[in-house]
Amino acid sequence: MTQSLTHLLPHYGLLAVFIGTFLEGEGVLLAAGILAGSGLLHPVSVWGTASLGAWTGHLFWFWVGRRFGTRYLFPRFKRLQERVDLADQVIRRHPGTAILILQYLYGARIIGAIAFGLTHLSLGRFLFFEALNCTVWAVIVESLGYFIGEGVIRFFHGWGQWIWIVLTLAAVVWIFPYLKPKNFKRAKEV
Image 1 (spheres, rainbow, N blue to C red):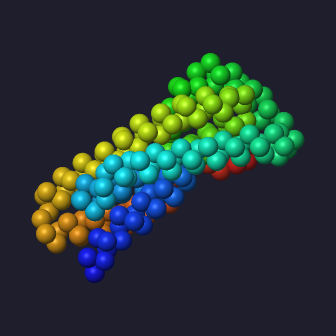
Image 2 (cartoon, rainbow, N blue to C red):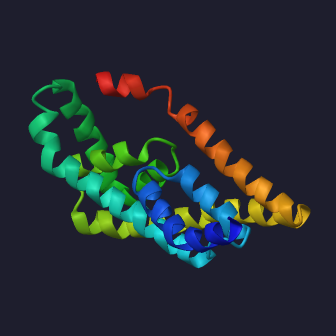
């Protein structure tokens, strides 16, 4: 069984990293970093896949905000236009800082990308700052997982590493639903 798992992880593990980072992937990337530290995934492949997944996800949500935001959101929520205009001024003055801040707030990446799509920020500037930001974000989160995984594997030798890997994956799956921001319901109502 461990041979088939070891054979499948490099292929489907990277697909899971791409899909997970496309959709808000801190937990997925942290788990992938732990697996990379355990020697089951290649660290550079995880980093590249996570960067690309996050970048394409943000580009998609930016497009959703740009394409559908003014048509569906503004007619229903008049006060939203005032807030978007204020955010637009801040984003145009400091796009790199605004993108950086939203990248590291858990649960704000998708909403932030949609919000950037609602502003007058050019697609080129968004793509540039987002590419830099996703690359740095992937390095930081994966490195954290990598060093955790590598340290624990050195501590546990042999079969202990498999127990650690299974427990880590189970913990990520179990904890993930509880990591949603508490203000999410309020954001939907606005």
